[in-house]
Image (cartoon, rainbow, N blue to C red; front, side, top):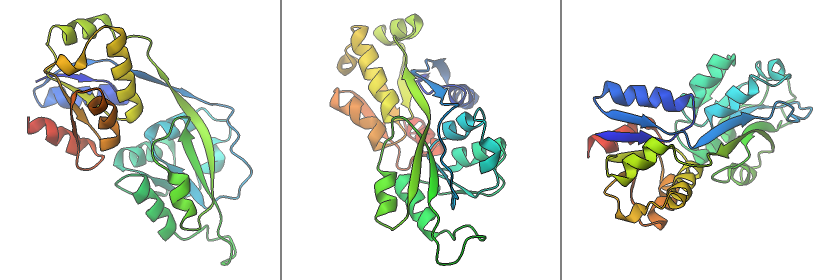
Amino acid sequence: MRLLVTRPAPDGSRTAAALRARGHDVMLAPLLTIEPEAEADLGTGPWGGVLITSANAVRALAAHPRKDELLGLPLLAVGRRSAEAARATGFAEVVSADGDAAGLARLAAARDRTPQAPAHVRLPFLWLAGEDRAGDLDGQLATQGIAVRTVVLYRAVIATALPSDVKDALAAGNIDGVLHYSRRSADAFVALALAALIDIKKLTTKHYCVSSQAAAPLREAGAAALAAAAPDEAELFGLIDAG
């Protein structure tokens, strides 16, 4: 198939390589650029652990002057890829929820707090988050009596236009499928296609989305969007294999 990958670097290149290894022709058009907030105020703690809902969080942490203060804490990651990124950044104790924000909240609720803290003290978690967030992790933690400090450690900046070769390929019907890894990138695709005078309702292109949240803007725009059964790249690739 002729596929377009819209996710930011460096994940987009890794996804493209995996798809090419499966025999697909792949174009890359990162619609978001991840910019770290190197001076984000992490607060004073102490923390019961670190939460991340994206690998971008720990990549952004690498540029933060207080990174080393956090590396000794347990880190709870939303999924396998974000857990791998945390280990690569230097976190030793990493656990993956293998799911979504709700799964991460359940994992946080089940975890013991920092051993050094008195048994009656429930230390808050530190959530290293993006500026734009899907879901309500704060609220889900609050319902379970878990305190969290949310720190915006990075932001995703939307591209100003589709690359010219991608725009031409879409308009000519030369892209069979587009992969979307977040609602924000799907929103960006819809907006940039509109700006390029491309009516995505009229395209035969299918949209393969990592979640129903990512699929929502495309469906609202009238495009054919399929959502993976679980927010995992293997599930997303399964949609493509199924045609």
